[in-house]
Image 1 (cartoon, rainbow, N blue to C red):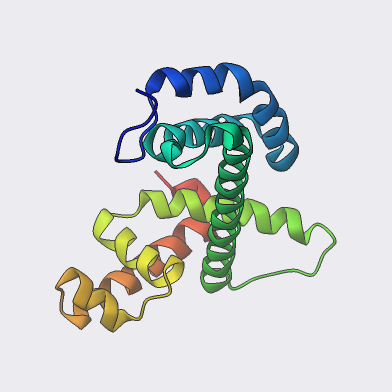
Image 2: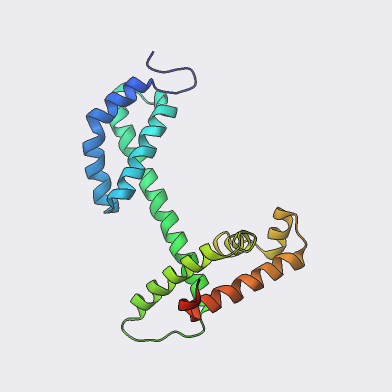
Length: 177
């Protein structure tokens, strides 16, 4: 059976597609992403999609279908990474009071972004979800309160505590633990 009524492809066909096209897809994705770990992740997603919905493609166009899926997955990952970096940069600017205009500004900013990412991971989960919803998802405090079924004051307090903790950890990185 090549395909089911649900659009799934037979695992044996997906295996054959992998054997035939994985090397070309890997080269294509490496050119796009320039990161072997990300390439492996996108390859896995691509062949997962082939297994789940590759039956909707025509046999004679499956190679092109695989490349399109891989391309779209790679672009989605790039967009997600840009959003993630932008969010971290915004959070970095929110919590850091001091920025220099020195030539090494970009390097310092990247180090600060990494510091913030680590500090964010150290927050209690109830504060993390509020910060992520506010900064990454651009939700209002009211929307966050409704989503989590919390009083608005609780959400505001968690955000205030998170910003205070993040600022302290960023201003004094040696006091993290």
